[in-house]
Image (cartoon, rainbow, N blue to C red):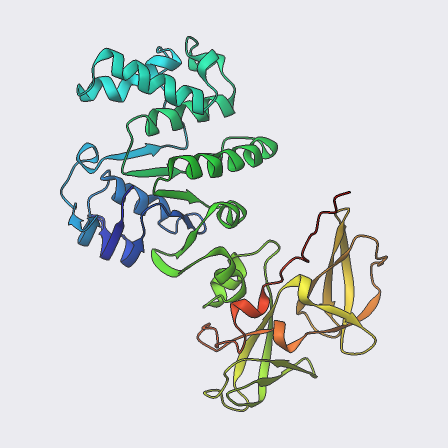
Length: 379
């Protein structure tokens, strides 16, 4: 395992392109950390800098407290899995997995064989060791790439969009397997993806990047319930958070009243620094919007039926502002129907004109629902 610290890391290419901008980050031993963000945000570049495949323009990168800026990938003790798998097609699966160990020349033939067989058994590859990569499915090749990385017992395990070439069903299975591998290995993992669903399901800690800047760092639920910026609010969550333009009516340290298309909405936030008439954005998750007999009038534009639930794509009446509403799949709703919705104040987020979130007057523990206690009856 390894502890990783980035202090003021920058990446500037010779043409002047500033890709990573003053990144600061700390990853604890054994954490599964996911770098997430849209294409071109710098997440893969950051990963390659950690691996030693990209030079650091300025700042310090530390592994277990030691600055490693000038160490090679081998000297850093890092294992990496690429998006393309990068397997050697002329080698058997056994030879692919053992390659790094033979190159290091630190183990005997018997020790290498034991290490390869141990990893192959864990990844359920034992029966495939004599085959070539071309004979394997995408999921099997992915497991081989993982095996080749972990057989060296790396201090840090890096994965660069490893599931992007797999079909949807296989991606779900591989996500579950990766989570199991992490629990078994107890390794420090950095995982890069543009898929925020992968980030939410795998991560202990998510790092959201935007244009080379670390936008927010936190647990999946922290980012979901307490986004610090409008960008994070819109990026984390599927479907994304609704964002409605409004104007402050009145505000204090406990709440804010906001006018949205002639209707009044409230948010339980510290709005003491807001001024009357100031433009703000009110955010609310689709599942938190409530259908009611009175409230904000919306017209249904389309309905997406997903079985257990339906998504109502609506537009505020006499406005071009859109509102997505998640309802049970048994609820009947027709296009062009006009509905009324309420926006519960304890579920609303508020963002100022600089797209920064105002502090919610609610804590994470207030959002946690414990299941009922289960009892087992015995005769």
